[in-house]
Image 1 (cartoon, helix red, strand yellow):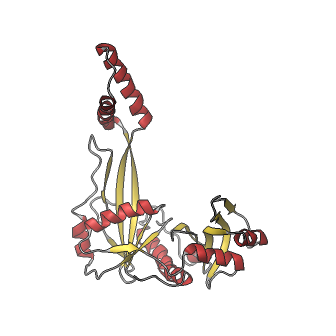
Image 2 (tube, one colour):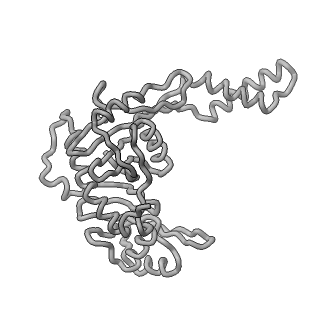
Image 3 (cartoon, helix red, strand yellow):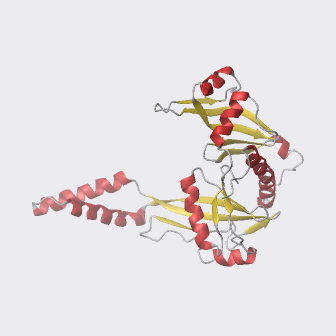
Length: 299
């Protein structure tokens, strides 16, 4: 369910329950794109069942799902069609269209083509840990996560969040772990990293599927490069990539987690089991990660 996570701290007292959240989310349900809409987003049942609940509680963790539909209309198609129409108009009138007229023609062409465009559906899981007072958004970039966070704030009454910050920067800590070959307790260094020079060259060195606990990596750090990405494992149960902006990427549960969890029959609803296992492991890992980065920075 979660391959990438960006974490937010609930900053104020938030007196709510599942019934209130459900009612709030109903004010912004997902609706497919209209004929002239290029994007539509709203809340959908996280279990994937039509008319299901918009928030699910599994083992004390609350799961939401933002559904996004986007019309696929390449700009090159719009440009070509608009240019063809512009040539027809100019040929009939004998006058060259102004820049403003060309711009208006492109916008008109796009509106005419949108109803015939293909659509792409995407889902963004959102995980709220009410006890830890954290919100986790499945997103590959902070900008994307912030878009979801804005919609979440506008949907849920009284919720206030801010990006999680730590006392020490991930870059400083990751560089120190690589230089000493000594990761923090319960963490292990995996086989991927990215090092970036802090001078004007901004030179980047990447290692992938490679033993990185080597002198060559240490020399790069001694020569001024800093770690911006580092693959780690936690307690031999979860592997992930930590980035300079405190993103957790490429999350994967390891074999130790799955041992003892019986496989479910085909067609059975795996939602509760998948959520309980995933959030159960990550809810234990995240505090260890925060501690490894010097603890949380509280403003």
